[in-house]
Length: 357
Image (cartoon, rainbow, N blue to C red; front, side, top):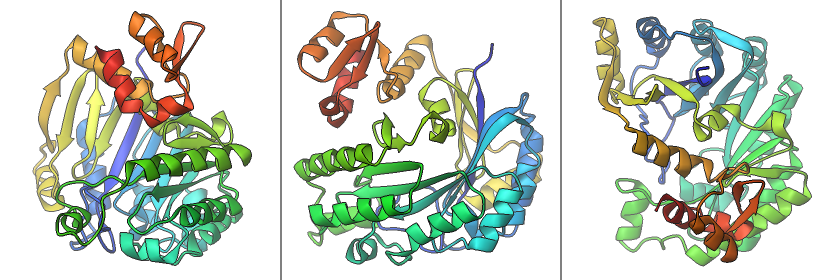
């Protein structure tokens, strides 16, 4: 059997570029042609089987009219019960748009909350008010979305432990069935990187990041959200982001849109990054892929290990290194599986390196 297939659709447009973001995003440019070009790319690719998951990411997909997203969705053959996710900024989507997306077949809404504290939002460059994300989550429920997720970032310069607790409590007040929480990372080329280099902001503190993570686990577990990947918690198995689960557990994915990545049959490639270049290639009848790489068996093994070790299901427990990591308190060994402990989640990269040999 072939592994499940996810389709990722990259909408590269944002109202503003956040200071920490290094994604392939653009404030300016004609957004009106994205849907037609994405449809044309889908027809060029000839995807050969139904998609079990579809994910509209960005950027901010909901800067486009719902009908544009739904026109693209209708071009994709879906497997029965397929999960369809749309990412949204809380101030880029309203009740009318949510209702249209839900009626059109979107099953899951992922809202970029990041923080529930005004001064942290301002530092990050977010445009929504602190109270908007919980309000948007409740509107999503009213529109019929069973699965609503909130994305958070912890460890911003100037954020206190009390600020992070406020953020978590605000997020939980909206009763999402999924929550993602990521420690702030400083990527070269971002505005945040330049601020830190000039001494205008302090780099994230590792001890503070660990403290925030422990608080996250404590509050979310108490609220009935359980970790299933290092940075992700869900109410139950149905509430998990199955598109991401596909990445972590050896599924295949086809990326559509500027700069979208694909991984099918051991082959990896990325689309042309700039929207104009991407659209021009498609208009010429040329698939926009570049940087094609065929992974060998060892590369594929390491990739699977790197992703799966971060999940609640863990990896095969064979080998003395897993036993040593268990002795060190970083893994739990049960039924021939090695699963990260809470301390191990804080040191997941180290655990991966040691298991990889």
